[in-house]
Amino acid sequence: MMNSNSMFTILEDATPTTSATTTLEFQSTWHMYLLKLGEAAQSPSVDHVCDIHTVADFWNLFNHLDFYALDREPSVWVFVRGARSPIWTAEENKLGGCWSMLIPKRAGVEVFQDIAMSLIGESVAEIDKFTSFSIAAKRGVFNIKLFTDNCEHTKKLGEAKNVFPSDMAMWKHLGQCSEIRYTPNASR
Image 1 (cartoon, rainbow, N blue to C red):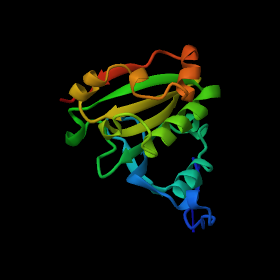
Image 2: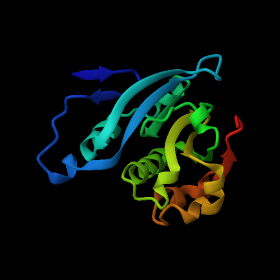
Image 3: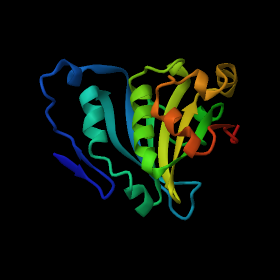
């Protein structure tokens, strides 16, 4: 079965190879949502796209994403760990906040994939504090956001460079983008 959309094609029945790495399960299930931003950006339409349980699920998804389609349709891809809402203003997210970065499009896909692999693969310090991450397109850049569960925890973590490994692509491209800034959820 194939799920087609102008933004991506996901091979839902793709059979993983027999390699042990493709059948490895992640510690947490992640869910991908497509938030379509209409004229009323306060209430986007939310479509569940797929669940990510294994390494094979991850690569099946990422090998079929069309990042440049985000320019054609005002939308956001949101990846959520567990059963949380993908909506920033939801009650369960009101204590959280997010780190945001604007990355030039020429580097954005590499940075986003690196962040996704680190968060979904749970190889980031204090992974339990991260609830979701997203990507959207703006004029010439990708807006990448990393959402946390609690502003107080995030203050203790300090800057993003204390959390993410120094060899990540985001650090290599940081000089080409705006700084990484933290914003508490204003809905609290």
